[in-house]
Length: 312
Image (tube, rainbow, N blue to C red; front, side, top):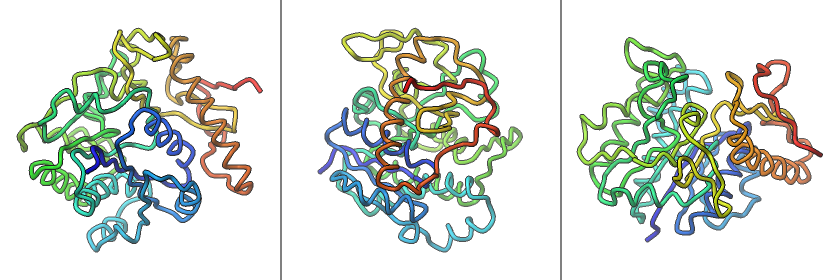
């Protein structure tokens, strides 16, 4: 039995980031299997040729049922990809039952330490949620995007977890919009899980600030490097969520399109290693698939909030 079964959803436009997520996860966590839902053929073709031993690729038609197809017809592409997150996790939990724990991982995560630390906080919990831990600048986002972030949603292999993921899947099929609906407390797939501590037993809110560190909370922390490991407030950084990060070219990036990251320790210790990994990955993929041009944002349409160019 594997300890962890992780699921994720990827399109061709997020392929480069997904490769970094897979590679850094594999570097830090040895006992896992990653199930990747490919929503288009380019993503499937390129990832299939990676020949990763700890990965199973799922094509969209393998997952889609009448409920999902109906949802597909009444929302945009981005909203449908969000809808697929709990659907994919539920699919994996039902089809691949030989794991102790499961989790959905967004493709724009990068791992700096072993995620097993998250589950070790409460090994018998059924569900694992990460608070946004918003900094003062982002405090108002609690009313817009919710208390918890669904870039990581973990659970144990038990009946409570399966029921909760089925419920989440059902709610997203019913409604999953990019609109931040404050009145109804909905935003994509994300705000539904705020109900879990009330609806379900044994929900653990992750304690460590090293899980789901991101631009919305990084201002709260002192970032440092000790023995080649990144720490936030003297706690190991487990994974960073690169929300708002844009790829402009193989060596040009926009760290965040809606605010500038002023702390140079954050840029040097977290963002720079990520950009170097991305640049190397892009160049490798482009050598094999020179015509593949997805994943790049047009610099003219991305707000130039925090442009960064790697030295060539």
